[in-house]
Amino acid sequence: MGMAVAGALALLAAGAAQAQSNVTIYGIIDTAVAHVDNTNANGDSVTRMASLTGSFPSRIGFRGTEDLGGGLSAIFTLESGFGPDTGTMGQGNRLFGRAANVGLKGKWGTLTLGRQVNMTYIAGLKADVLGPNLFAIGSIDPYLPNARSDNAIGYLGNFDGFVAGATYSFGRDTSSSGGPAATGCAGESPVDSKACRQVTALLGYEVKAFGINASFDKLHGNTGAGGGLTSSRNFDRRVTVNGYWMLGGTKLGAGVIDRKTDAATGITESTLAYLGVSHPVTPLLTFDAQVARKNVKSSGDDTDMAVARLTYYLSTRTAVYGALGLMENDGVAAIALDAGGTAGAGKPQRGIMAGIRHHF
Image (cartoon, rainbow, N blue to C red; front, side, top):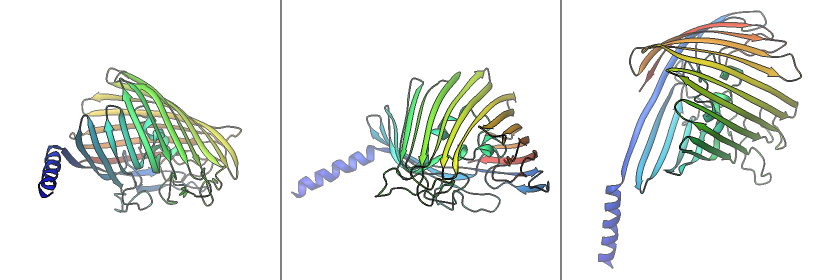
């Protein structure tokens, strides 16, 4: 018996020795100073250091892989967001609010369990040339750059350019203070199987020269949830179509987000369309520009946005940038140009920003 146990332990030790594993620590520190006008009904201006994002939200993360053999790997991601203006943690003061998941990866794709970005987030990654910039479409719809799901099972696969993915969440957002996309809808209810459940899906074709995809996202509410989603009968649904085209080194990106919210306060429908270009002026200087329009159906409270940004790379890890932006609010719309900011109802808002970003 002793010999058998010793042999088994030796085999396990040999297998562990053959397994290849690594852990990477990475992050971004990005902050900017922005000035915007018409922040309230009096038309007052404000100058401040950005908290939610500059050109990218600041973060620190840990990513690990272990080679299990046969083309199969174990993976994990732990990623924490923070505000460089004060050093506070983001995403509702969560330790790993940007990501906390573990899974398996093989030729068949990637399967993950835990808090993770969902398909709405992934769908716009290549088409939205400004991404999570302080002035961008994330100011119009804050969910887009914050589309993450708690308690989620996720899958994503790429088969010779054909991309397919989905997430299913048993309860999308356990925090009511987790940033612009928080809903305080914990879910996992033993008495209501639909409460706070969320499903997202993506299908597309993406290669280096061009790509197009479509995504679907539906979140149900529950008692106490924000945004008027106070019952599992209430929902927030987005359908997106996104595409990009490469013309040499220049990228054109465009998309449409159709949204329908069935809340306790009523039904709201809107369409957000965007078009952008990213052009490398020189190997060290990139120009990005984007226009967008939000059309609220059966309402005059529409919004138009235009943003231009220049980024100069001091090195492969460090860049400085500046941007100009304009948000035009019609009717009583009060969408701020700067993510997380405020605007006077019906007032246009102009802004300028400059910042520095370092990757590590």
